[in-house]
Length: 260
Image (cartoon, rainbow, N blue to C red; front, side, top):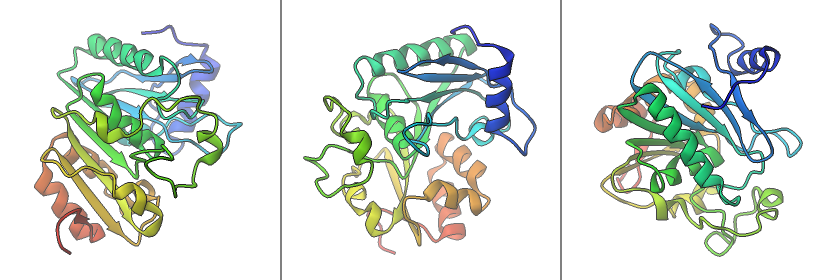
């Protein structure tokens, strides 16, 4: 892995990641215009790759997200990846560099399972990256399936970021969702998510859950319901029926394609 920066930056990012929980060691390994990378070494053989969402403004880089829940309180190793250009993996050679980071992390921990997760733009990356590097399971909260105006002409969100992308290399995450990956997608059952929900493929290796009363805030809603750690564990363990029962019981969710 890349050498870590000074302790001041490491401490700042660690505190930001989990301000009210026991601190995890999550040093910032890389910080440049193309990519930010943080690293946590756990004790298990599972590697979790967490992709950041767009964050809260163009002048602030996307934050590290899901620190405690993604690592199961520190047990699992995790590499956290943020794209400060907000390119939805479309920046030149960004996918190739991300694959190199994942492969290095996997080798370092001797991972027997590699899984991905993310929210919004991070969810898009969590689904699409499996087309470039082997991924056992992917969990995406309110992902964009596409930001290509040809595929989603009515999608007006994230316009200021989309306009900066010189060429859309990955037109749809669905085109890269690998057959060997178990995909779990949580979307809001609302008009704001409808254009993206329509693009979610119906496949044997993909479970899509629609959450009533939810917009583009599926991850905060799941966290507020107190079931985020369980959702992550069941998705990564590929316990599909148990996850469906949990979401139906606690959030009245239904699977896409299954009548309410």
